[in-house]
Image (cartoon, rainbow, N blue to C red; front, side, top):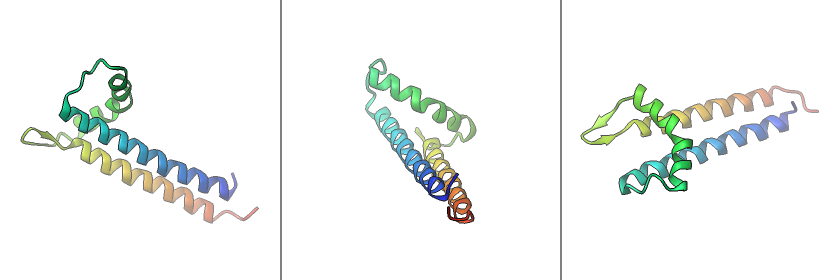
Length: 99
């Protein structure tokens, strides 16, 4: 892979993580409104976010009163993980010879 391809991959990972974080935020905010879970939008949103949210609730069961804080931990972990992977790819790209 060329260094420019690695740089594009790094940017793609950063964007993908940010989009997923926003999808999680939308899902969490919608739980406060209690929409109909049988709508197509909510079913798709659930399929996209439920695996990650269930993982966070199992491994980071943080509750403050009735408020579940595990999505916040998930967002922090996704952000850190995306940054680490992206920076690693950028470091690899910088150490490659220009072609």
